[in-house]
Length: 311
Image: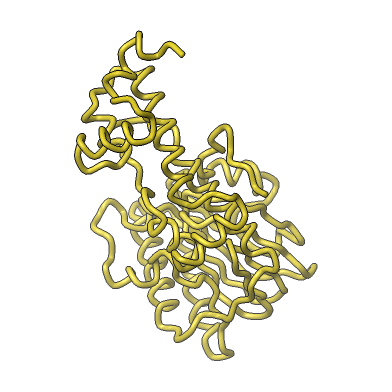
């Protein structure tokens, strides 16, 4: 049975930290706007595999040779031969390299770089949506288009053109639009320990939201249906898996974490009750008041008073 985390795990790994931790000895084939975009050759990695983690950046990979597996919560993809993989920053995943020979390229980019400070390209919204399958196996005639665009992108990275970032961003958009043209993602397989892995990833995503740092940055994942798309499963399946593995419902886990955070904010910050309610994702302060009293028998005001804290 999986135990809940006593301390929140580390936040999503950033692009600079990822490069330092996993790519430090691998030569980059180009990069710009430090911390926002970089490109690498897969041939330099050999059999390097990457652990389950959530990143704060996208990864677009063109695999021309070699076999690998991509693992998410309950699903995995066996990848052999030409393929394109687009990993979403909010979805934890692991990469397992299976063959010595690996060729192709990949680029890492943040959402900020992708959009360039402008409004998101709505035409790409379906491709970048949470829950979208990440692996696309290429047919023989589809590979040259991706190789050409990647080649032009890398050539641009070697120039000193003042508007280099804009041009690279355009090539990146063309690559994503080319990917969106493809018909169907690759078939996936189900992990034999799917429920355990799903429950663990649910608890990890839940814990990563805490502690809440600012009132104007409220919880984004407040209900089971908010987690299900990130984990690529139906909410009913998520609920059954979490209850079977942990003995508690997803709603109970959510309530426990919100309640513990509410106590911390009440006792250790000067935030108003309205600020705390908003930070914890309650639409109205009265909703927070009722939630807190239902679970503790005390009002938030009573917990904030020193005399009410004596056990």
